[in-house]
Image (cartoon, rainbow, N blue to C red):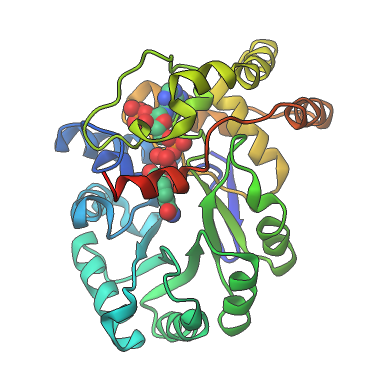
Length: 320
Ligand SMILES: NC(=O)c1ccc[n+]([C@@H]2O[C@H](COP(=O)([O-])OP(=O)(O)OC[C@H]3O[C@@H](n4cnc5c(N)ncnc54)[C@H](OP(=O)(O)O)[C@@H]3O)[C@@H](O)[C@H]2O)c1
C-alpha cells in the first residue's frame, strides 16, 4: 500500500481501527479470528494500527499487542489515554497509564500516544509538556489529541509539536473541516479520521430494518434510525453513482474522497471480516481525478445529513 506521513511517522495510507474487535459494535469475533484479521491487514500492507486503553477495558490493547508481536517494529502502533480530572498529578498519571498500556501491548515504546478526550482544558499545556518529555526519553515517538478544538490543537502544538489529531470525520461529519483540518495543514500535523465510514453507513449496506444488539453504538446513532436511513438516501445515491462509474464500492469512494482531500489525512476504518478489509484497504488504490472530486463535493454540498454527531448520540448511552 502507498504510504503517507503523520508529521515524522510514515504509515500506510489507510490504517486499521481495531476498536470493533473488542468494543462498540456488538458481538466480537473469536480471539484467534481477531488476531488473524490484524495479521492479514499487515500482510495486505497496512502498517498503522489504532487501539486505546478504554476499548474493552484493556482487552483491545492485549489483543492488538499479541497480534502485532511478529512485526511490532515494522508498524506504527497508536494508543490513547484518558485522564480523570480528579486523579492528581498529571505527569505521574500519564506515565502510569503509558506503562500499563505498554505492558498490555507487549512493547517498550508506543509510536503515537493520544490524549483520548480533553476532560480538563486547563491541562492542555501540562499534558503537552509531559508528552514532550516522553518523546525525549524514547517512550513514545509522537503524540496526539482526539476530538480537540482548533484552539486546543494550537496551544498543545506550541508546547510539543503534535504528530496527529484523531477526530471524527466522514461525508456525514464534516465540522473539523472548518478549522481543525486547516490548522493541521498549517502546523504540519497529521489528521486521522475515525469512523470514516460513519460507522459503516456510507458503505450503503445497512437497511432501515437492521437490528443492532449488545454494545453496538448504532442502537443510539441517530443516522441509523429507520427514518434517517430513508432521509439520508440521497447521499448514498451520490456515492453509489460514483462507485458504479469507477468500478469501486461505496465505502471505497468514501475513503478515496478523504484521501484525495489532503496528503496528511489517514483514515482508520474498522472491520471484522476479511472481505471488508480487502474492500477498505483496497480503497488506497482508488484514485479520484480532480474533476471527479469536485463533482462529488458539489453534490455533497447540496445534500443535508440527518442525525446527530456520533459523540452526541453516544453520550446518551451513559444514561441508558
Ligand atoms: N478517538 C476516538 O474517540 C475514537 C472514536 C471511535 C473510533 N475510534 C477509532 O477509529 C476506528 C474506526 O472507527 P469506526 O470503527 O467507528 O469506523 P467505521 O469504519 O466508520 O465503522 C465501523 C463499522 O462499519 C462497518 N463497516 C466497515 N467497513 C465496511 C464495509 N466496507 N461494508 C460494510 N460495513 C462496513 C464495520 O462492520 P464490521 O465490523 O462488522 O465489519 C463496523 O461495524 C475505531 O476502530 C477506533 O480505533 C476512535
